[in-house]
Amino acid sequence: MSRHILIGCDGSERSEDALALGAVLAQTLEAAPIAASIVPYSSYVLSSERADEVVERVSAPFLAMARKHLSGHEFETRAILNESAATGLHDLAESENAVLIVVGSSHRGAVGRVLLGSVGASLLTGAPCGVAIAPRGYAQRDAHSISDLVLGFDGSEEARGALEVAVALAAQAGARVSVTGAVEPVHPYFYPVTPFDDDHYVSELKASLSRSVDEAVELASRSGVKAHGELVRGFAADSLIDATAEKDLLVLGSRGFGPVKRTFMGSVSSAVMQRASCPVLVVPRGGANRLAGERAADHEAPPTGADETAMRGEAR
Image 1 (spheres, rainbow, N blue to C red):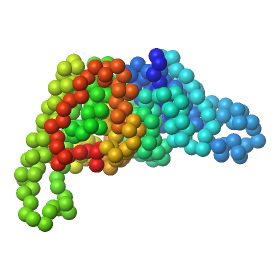
Image 2: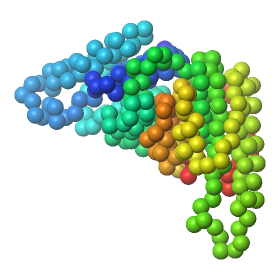
Image 3: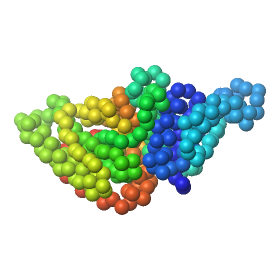
Image 4: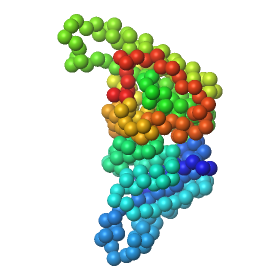
């Protein structure tokens, strides 16, 4: 394996969740996991020990945890000093050319839900690769597999990149993909001064998005993946959160005006990350091929039927 995924560990329960999800994704992506512990400088500055002794002591709990959850994989470990966990994972992802960073949710979140902590939030505003967040308590679930995926799709370039990743994952895991698009209501604040035909506008949105979703389903089917499309009426974040019930993974594209090949959290992904009930994987803008591997290169990107008035999801 030449590709790597990083799994952020600090010895806590959320590290167990990240390791459990990382093990599943490493197998599906055919990537070698690296369990990474970022030891804060404060641990060294406030200690009389040498730097290497501090790193060894602080990282010991996560190393034992990594051996437990990654026993079936050939994995590596890294323990380094850095100013912050997010910066350390950023730097390590760059140096290892990682395709994915996996972390756990904040310990303050409800069990069974994703809730971004400070590390996850920082990663999602500029990581050099995809980022996956495990819900709290994921490690304690009876089964860890990827058999039923949901893709948030709006026809944008970023959504098409996420589609490539979802299809590649589903093809490797033998999973199903639900391509979900939301036709969002128009807030009265955005109404023009002239009379506005809301019904006609929403009808046009629905038709445009329906074409895009159908094209996405067709592409997935051509790749041998079982897929179906679903259009829902409502705000994108709420619709995607509802769609995560009983699913194994939600795949989203990074927002449109983030830097190329970097994740960049938009309003939709931010809201989803507070309430999703399954793991969430955010695909960096322009980085689908790197994450999906060779499979993505064989896929023709689906043409988009969505025009500029269609629901743009993460492109907002």
